[in-house]
Amino acid sequence: MTENLLHQFDYLPEGLLACDASELHQHLPGPSLIHLEGRRQAPLFVSVLLHGNEPVGWQAIQQILQRYQDQQLPRSLSLFIGNISAAKHGMRRLDGQPDYNRVWGEGATPEHAMADQIVSTMRERKPFASIDIHNNTGLNPHYACVNRVENPFFWLATYFSRTVVYFIRPEGVQSAAFAEMCPAVTVECGQPGQRHGVEHAAEFLDALLNLAELPDKPVPEHDIDVFHTVAIVKVPEQLNFDFSLSEDDGYSDAPLQFVKDLDHMNFRELTPGTVLGMIEGDSASVQLEVIDDHGQDRWHDFFEIKDQQLFIAQSVMPSMLTLDKKVIRQDCLCYLMERMPLLTKP
Image (cartoon, rainbow, N blue to C red):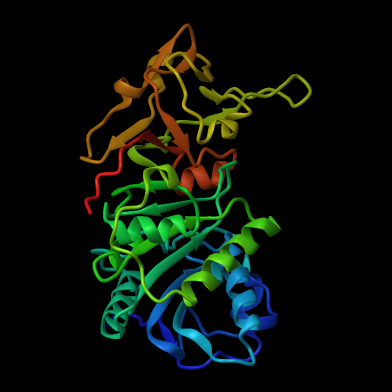
């Protein structure tokens, strides 16, 4: 029998408005779906803490619920609070856990069954829109991500940012599952601990709770910048890596040593010849996993090694570059993007 991880409430459990993300395990029995009634029936679905080290969504929701504590919400809200066991330790996920933002598809784990239950429950409730809120570990601007090239999705995204990323990989993400039933976005709110990220996410949520409908006309092109994720870059498990160190920092003998300001390259259009790192020893043993939307290996299209240096081989824009080795191992090194035109029609 599959373990049932999900707990549901039709009220806000006591103590939540005053507790940190790391304390949620003291107030909730596990991952929880909370339904709160508002004046408009079709609920706004919001997921927070799919990654336990990304508290911005929870902090923004606290602001919203405190704001409406003594009055009815303008729209019903269904709130999923995800990986509280990882949040207790400030980790993306615990060892042995699947990534809570990769289980919204086919799979046999209890977490996949939990995600299926949430999708089934929300399909019956006919959500107005779905918002998945994240921090990220690298230096990135605030931006929104969509999985459908459709007008309401782009409008939803631009209520948060004019910078929008369209992607279909990785699979199993929350926004892609909810895109089957309503406009859905993932919003990236900068690094944890930044007040602006919390304020921005809270303003976004408040605007959507007060919004009657999403337009189905095209977003004006001067109001949006759209990028398409063309590949995911990962460091193979067997490849040891580090970041270039100065003499004062010490020396690393890792075969691959990325430049120490790698995360400053996020959302910059890099030209061929941009150096990403240095190779120690046999360069033939150094190769990244670069997988495109079709599951094809694109290593030789996007990267080259010459004179013991790792270069960008064609113009591309990375996102999610980080200096956090744990996150790189658990997720990826970065995503590679290119600009794309708006393809929606009136």
